[in-house]
Amino acid sequence: MKYLKFLSYLIRHKWFVFLECLRLGVPWRGITHDLSKFLPGEFIAYANCFYANQHCSEQMEAPNSKESYMLAWLVHQKRNRHHWQWWILYGEENEPYATAMPDQYIKEMVADWWGAGRAQGKPDIIAWYQANRNKMVLHRATRRRVEYLLLHYRITGVGYEQGSAGIVNGLLINAMENHSLSL
Ligand SMILES: [Zn+2]
Image 1 (cartoon, rainbow, N blue to C red):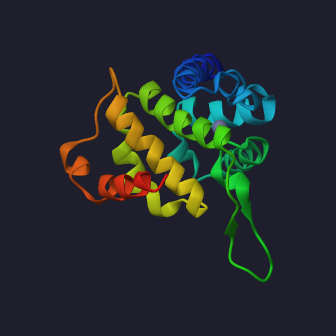
Image 2: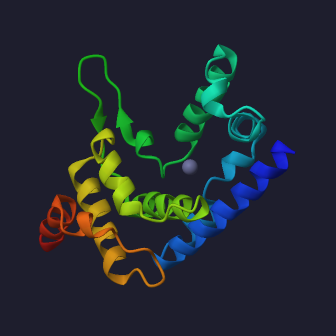
């Protein structure tokens, strides 16, 4: 049952991401998005984590479950260039260094956030971005592009939840607007 539930979530997620990729002009990224999640190594770990009787956060108490989910998530990031973690260089002598992401993957990443938000019933992705912004290690050009795209969504987001008033009036949007001027 948990496998069917995860399969149905995955298909719904892929559908929403595909729609967003279409809007951003990268349909092929939408078609191939997250296909690796159908591979057993990812599929089983994700289904076990999110759709078993016991939720992932409780299972995390058990080292084995935690390890298998963490490994699946790590492998997923290494297989899929729409995750910003793929673009981080870890050296022995330097801090983690973010290389610039090509535009098609930036668009797929933003589409992923919107698609996941819609699939989970939490469409205010600008609020989500603001809460998570400082946890992401992004190249300067990548961050500027991401924020430009989020701003673009706010303006043209037909049928979408618009960002909450607090955020629209807040620093994020100001920063995004300043960045977009220089594009
Ligand atoms: Zn992914």
